[in-house]
Length: 398
Image (cartoon, rainbow, N blue to C red; front, side):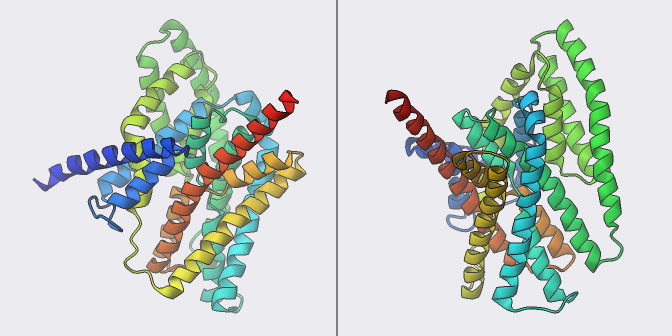
């Protein structure tokens, strides 16, 4: 009978996520903030109504894959190509600045370690955790505000995708220096091969979908085929190329975003995401939090870790956006939009745990960063966009 407990957990998650999502909306905050808070409240850290399980983790993974697929479908391809070079530069600084700041913070907190020692590698790895950007929270917030297709929204989305690819490569290099069995050049080659694969398969897939869409317009077989295509690319990216599955899902959406029924596919995906998979994903962030093992030194480290991680992203990405001729207000939006951490940071931390570069206790710091950034980013973005809109309204009135 214990197998049926999952239905109880899902019922609690969906009800709690939607209730607190509505509360967040009433408070003029994005719904995702309420859903994350719901996960924190019902999770083991506070009420203990729902515990994390493998099934919920897999549901959450489907949720983030669907979210990224929808983001790709909603992307303006022309705007994406236009912002691509700028996004690459922003992503590079968005990796470099947090990497350096994270390593320096670890060194300042625990003391300097000799080059090549375990302490040195741990410091570099703490910086590596900070490089990861979770685009899913920002995408959901921008989509809710109707800003996903703007220049700022597209730049954040593109930069975050590139950021994760670079971050994963950095992770591999760091592990390679500690473990000679890992081959960094193989990772670079796999990344290049993946993008070549996406271009070739993407062109063929687009033509096939375009023909099918023209022959069977606005039929359910189109979104069904699109969903299967999303899952296939997510699997291929992770299994064959070692690239995050969300990257494959995003490119699946990019490939299909220009067919006539792309909006119809996105509409069907949003139903699944909104009703079940989205709430499970956002609530799962809160469910991962367990504050029982928190000690004062770890708490102080965690606070510093969160502050350094947030501000290093804002400074690195924001200043590069300004150098790329964005206005100061838009540069700040780009920096804030890039400071969210999520599933990729957890994946990086888990990888570091498996190779002995980080202790389990530091997962508290990572989870705290995910929760704080996931809650603050949508709120700050909303305030920034509303401030600019009020400013424009005032100027027009004058």
